[in-house]
Image (cartoon, rainbow, N blue to C red):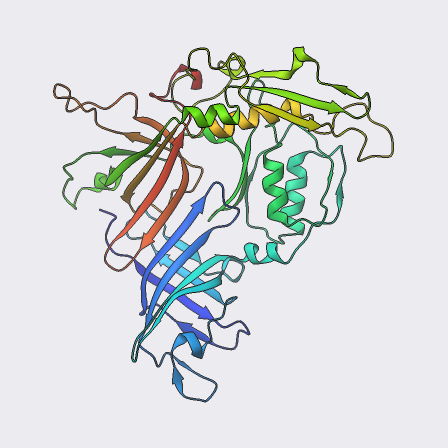
Length: 431
């Protein structure tokens, strides 16, 4: 079973000026590695216990790591953890371009012979993001996905790029000295997937150990399940490999927040846009967005969307905006730049529908999983007569919103927060 302890192959901490290094493997108590589809950077947390004498200080005498290195933020860490089973590849941030950086040091506890502190780590690109601004203009005729690729490569200065989904809509804008992450997340909310046919808007920008991802929610949902997990209160022997696919524990955190969805305009919204070229507002016939018009078009993780009775008929939110027409080019344009009719209400609907169900779950360590992956979960039915059957409503496909790979010398496991848009098993609407 993959909950057994992990082996730290490499944990080398390097001073800011790169003049000193220290191996912290023996003093490392635990390592937590995090990914989140709403986070532009991966993060990690390492708890270190130091008994002193680890490094030579400025005065030539042995000192603790905290003051001897010293630890003040900005230090680099080379990290490599061996997988604890044949099916786990482990974590590898040991190449110079992949090093993690110390963003802060917290929970420092110093005693006479012992020092304990927590290293909070981020990727190198997170540091670059804080010292970089995007000043240039992106032409109106360029696709959003091409602008995303340009910002990642030229301003974050990285080749650690995962999947960049193509967008069908074009958008011209000025960077306006904003940070790269700010622009990339902003562009995700305006993107429509290419060749989606009757699909819906809504992209996510995030980082995993595989690199930066700019993914359409529709395309993420269409992925094949990365793994399948089953909950059983009686676990099998450690000698059985299929123990790796058992759920250790789970809780249902959310089961559809109706009032929040109404407040955000998930089911229906009224759009009032002002055209500065014609001085007209959106005609009434075009202003109302209804989710019911997309029920048969939207790809789902479970069964077809089932709308609350009559709640999608009347708009529960009013959205106002001035159309971007003729503001980016010298020649006067009569069409909207990234027409909000194509993405705005659809994206609001898609982002909020994804949180219909939220489940927190802990499983044996599986470092093959990334944020944004789809997994299959089988939960038991609460019934006296059908004790050995699965719950058809709660079981099914889920998307990993966020995950944490926990490593220590005694136990290793993966905890996840899972989300999905509908109840039930994978239905005909997803074939």
